Image 1 (spheres, helix red, strand yellow):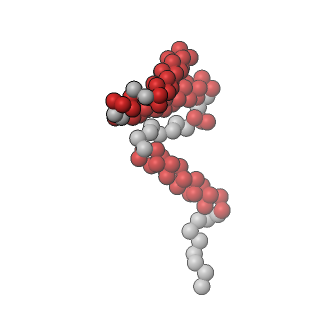
Image 2: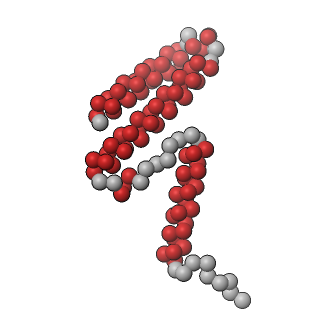
Image 3: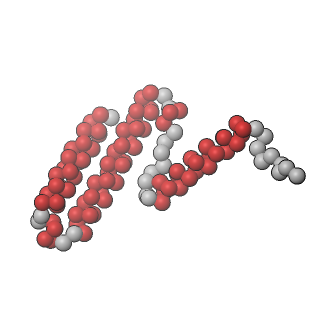
Length: 105
């Protein structure tokens, strides 16, 4: 005996799949402490671009916080080494990029 159809059509099945995937992605971002992704494609030009820039700033901010925490958690010997210098140079570059993004708004 065949099983009853769960969805009325293939289109309904695909729509349900897309919703499950979007929900799964949002849950994954929430677990990592990242903000939810905006529905950028549905916004008009200026608003969409501002949202994209704000999202980039948020992600860069999280990255710099994590990198600084990583640096602070290391030993003094590590902090005086070449890897620490590279990390601090990247941090400085990210901070400059963040200030440039603020000017772009």
